[in-house]
Image (cartoon, rainbow, N blue to C red; front, side):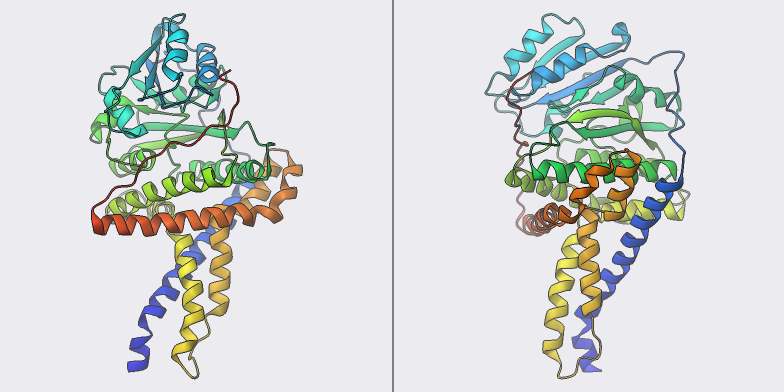
Length: 422
């Protein structure tokens, strides 16, 4: 008996990993098969409202001189009633030509204005938006990152679902425009396809919980105020908003047909830091919302289970690494180990990679996009998966360390690579 009690930590690790591995694997396969065989699309795809609501577009920009010009030129071409549209560029403590470029565009567009933050302001996108959003009185707020290039009809596509009074937020599909730069950008493109064309789309069509991504998305201002307003002290403001809306009973609508172009990281170091920031903020939200979701009634068991699975997205890869090391250490405690967990650790490690690069979903996504040639790189997807797994594991350790020491994560923006502002 004492022997089994001493092994209890191993059993807990193996048991938790087995449960999550099973759920993640079944979920990946089920979502892939569903998207592969369904012909459904968003019920809002062809909707044209009788009245277009007032919209404010927010574009936070910190040292974005390489990309802000192209973004604002695209904003001027948006097909939306001009008397119902305002575009606010938040010049967030920039020390380059971001403010100059934005002011030049605003001078020739009456719908556009520039809000400049002081050099002493709190850094970070959530803080930048928080400084401005309380001054807005439009019905809808739509967010874009400074490197994004919207097409003319995009804003109407994002806003149309708000005719449904239960819709709290909308989210479009992000497509990298620099896919063919190098191996990393090509692998990120595969991950993006799987995440949006299959995972987000399946969650939307199955009435689960599509995630509001914080950019290429809109939020109903009355819904935001109903859930307590904007929070500036959150690293992953998009995940935080998603779960606050979910708990309050609002829906998030993912719109696959609302596509916008973005710039992917072009170096492994930048990608590592980007995933680390995402994972850190996402895990903060997991600590905050895991128990409240378990206690929600009236939202359906499968909706709550999927919401929990998404919260554990960046925890699971770290758990698979722990399981792998535990399976190697476990036999050292026994002359004749009572159980063999090697197969479990290998399977969980593979699925842990698949969590960031879901092989089933990639195969379905490239077929759905009618770009099957992109699947040729699937055997190399483990390379970007390894970077993501290490980044998410490091972020989890850093979160634990900072919680114990009282420190905070140092926010940093993603480096841009475009060589011209237009």
